[in-house]
Image 1 (cartoon, rainbow, N blue to C red):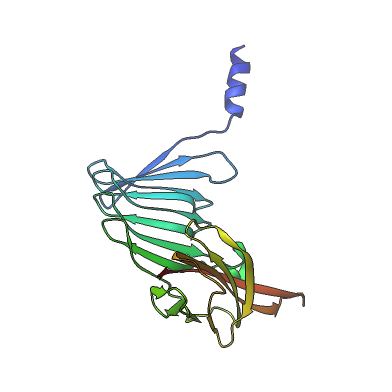
Image 2 (cartoon, rainbow, N blue to C red; image 1 turned 135 degrees about the vertical axis):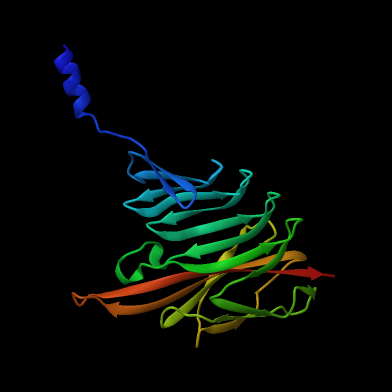
Length: 244
């Protein structure tokens, strides 16, 4: 019976955490057995306070990460995909107020070959009351007729893709109301010289939201001679108010 018990124990996978010291901080690596990640990493400062928790897959950051101030208040949080930031990263002040949101996107929704890159798509800054004080992107510039117009006046915007990754661009445009509900029609337009000027077909009193998607793309032949396409998706939001 004892031999059988030892045989069963020896056949089980061995899981143990690894702890190391690095410049006053302590790093603990905890193995995880699932298909998504293989390690949880916890970083502690010299006082024993946790400062960072993230996950890894084959040595690369993969999955959620949260950083902390010394008082255990969240400093920033977001998610990674195979070593690349992806989605929204949120940054907080020590009083727990949301300060900045940064959105990272990647071509074609995955990372393969030469497309292994993610880029910063949008940056939104907030004041201490939680209101948006600045919203923009490093990849496009948005020019408008103003934040507020009179009912019956024309509203227009010009969108310029200031840092194209590839050779061509389309704009997919939908109109949203104040409840973030999309309109019935979405239109697609070719952006000439990476820019386009448009006016909404209709609007309503109060806040109007225009949400769009820029598809920056190019076609190329791979090593086998097959035609493929690289596409970077860049999102933008524009808001304007209509008053009597």
